[in-house]
Image (cartoon, rainbow, N blue to C red; front, side, top):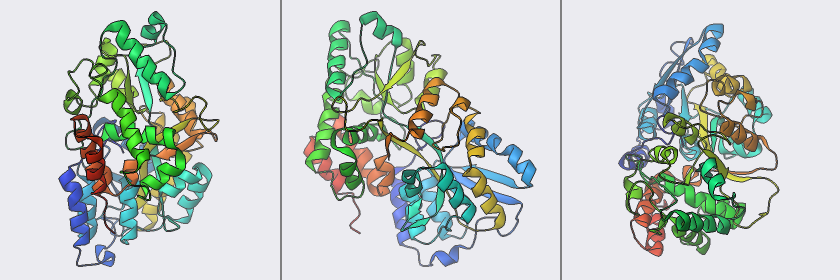
Length: 444
């Protein structure tokens, strides 16, 4: 899920609840929505609505500027921090955009199931087949129908650290989860300071960085089958496999000797904005931080260089057991899905371009982001860590799973799961937290 800028979308949990209320309470059907805001009225104008804001929005518009001129189509982009709530309101009221950039496949699927979205046109289907793995295509598919195409992506589960600090103390990159815990203990012993800095703060979306931790551990500890069944609630949050992941995370997050470097005690995790640890890393106030590939930009903004011989570099959270069960990397990640509310010719042309390798290379070359499109040249990425992330996504041996909370119904993934992570680090016992998260799962 993308944020305003480089992180997560800043969403109101109350607003997320409103999505279900508004859509469930529709008296009119999807046929009452009409087309997009301008797709049928002016074939030279295509409206696009999403969560990407500020500098990232400017780069997004720059990425398609030449294509607009060449094709005589004006793409009007609008961003909103309340996208999740407003997209449902606008669809119900007949004021949907022509195209939406969904930060959550689960929300896209919900809109498709309710009949608001148009199936992807043939040109988009071809681009998806040529440029994306079957897993990525599945995230845009509902009941066997492809509705959209992936856009940008991120690789999650990176542990950011200072190479010079590691070299000075003779630390090595751990090869399994226990090795990471041992490294944590060693750094604490050597420095008499907490090694980890963790920030859950994200305005109304506070708590999401904790879900990333749990997702990474579930995938590495229990494997893809458990992960997939957890996403669909065939395995509930109260299952021992999920509890074990929380407990493993707690070995770091609930240990007062291990957190929260530069910010305070364990409870400061919730109040620390998720971007602030970047400065603590660069300043040397903390040794380790867990965050996705987009954090490269936060570290650069904090004055650090991201390189193997730079101020900060990163390694992937190791497998639960050395060697693991796969020959390649095992990672979670995120991204967006582009889908349309109308099928006007101009809308379909924009969809086709945004699903192409040409667009992926155009946007990635502008810096700060990556894509999982197979036609993307990693050399276009703006940093070495982003180049490495692209290589991971393009590697056929990689085991990739989309961010679980983004695939779950919003009442859970962006509701009780986020709140549960806050309660967890604030001291609520694990069983109670898991029961409360699971209680948010829709009954139908």
